[in-house]
Amino acid sequence: MRTHLAPVLERAAQSTRLPISACADSVLARDLLASVDLPLFVNSQMDGYAVRSADVAGAGPDSPARLRVVGTTHAGDGPGPGVDDDEACKVMTGAPLPGGADCVVPVEDTSVEGSADPADPAAPSGGRSATVLVHAPRAAGEFVRRPGDDVRAGDVVIPAGVRLEARHLAAAASLGESGLDVRPRPRVGVVATGSELVAPGRPLEPGQIWESNSITLAAALKACGCEITATVISSDDRDDFTAALDIAAGDADLVVTVGAVSMGDAEVVRQVLVDREGARFAPVAMQPGGPQGLSAWRDTPVVCLPGNPVSALVSFVVLLRPVILEAVGRAPVPTGRARLSRAVHSPSGKTQYLRGALATDPPATPSAAPSGGDLPVVDPVSGPGSHLVASMARADVLIEIPADVTSLPAGAEVDLVPL
Image (cartoon, rainbow, N blue to C red; front, side):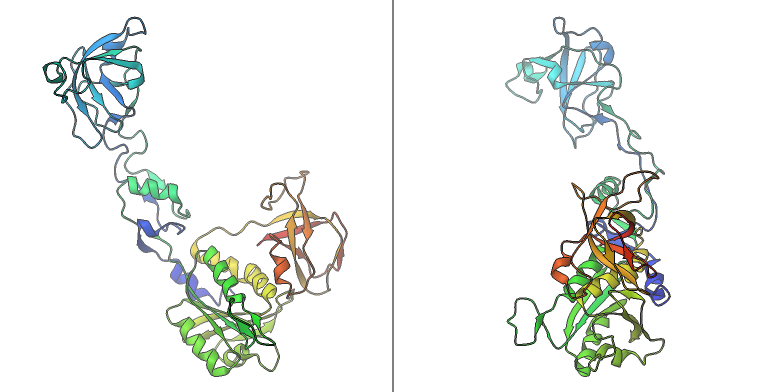
């Protein structure tokens, strides 16, 4: 699979520049270095008064320091008037600290005589005689933000390989970055085949079923970081299927087909793609998900999955998902171990993937337990049939039964693959 998808991996190893608003859930391709110090300038951490710490060193509830208010500065203003002995400048959170001040007294620790706003025409002498009473001492540097307190220019703010979330974008935007270099998302077209398939919501004729595979695979691919370029439902007619391939491969890096890969009379996927250069169609020793195929269409790699809904999803999770995650730069999904809630049986010679639900409260992701630690319990869900799609909704893991094991008792340890 990995060799077949080498073109997808090669493209994904490059980088593309996206606007920061479009980077959520992408993987950063290069370290993001701070171009500036943050904060950008000395500013107030609180709404209050910028003062000289020496002027309020002896302040207390019963012996407040009395300081003349010389101005008011808001966030977005330039530096306010400088502060001299026994003076204060009213400042709002984020406002530049005026010259001469070395700390900020929160407004909660103050009271005002006259007007606190020198621009208030109702204040005595235009506000110049307003006095603030400071009821608590403050040391130099208190409630003051200084450049470099957060990050220094040249520091690595976000390392390459990080899957970008809201907090990462906040940091990048605060540094003035309008875009980021990220790993390209593989573009994937999905084709579901079968003359019996009808889009959900439409009425059924005798012998028809509602199609779920294209929806399932598109959602699974999106969850891995892919961009879905097309989802097409095709009949088992050869011309219809080749037209669907043309649509799906139009601007895609990869096409995933679902169904018609076995040995029946109407296996249109196999019939059309088996003779392409490098094509390989063969059963895989796993259940569900035996029939598989690899081919190409108009120079676009094609991965052909079996059509039963459970087989399709299991095949994706076991065979295709690891390569897709590598392509987008994400870490592999961690596997784990658990103990069976009941005995199970498995056919010899094939690796069996049973659907299972972790019996935890609240549900936990499976992870390898430390030596001697307690393992979670996993409950097999429904039977092994590849058509049991509705019951699969209760499962959150696959239980892997090795090919050389035909039965396991309740309590046996098993490997788990998260869905």
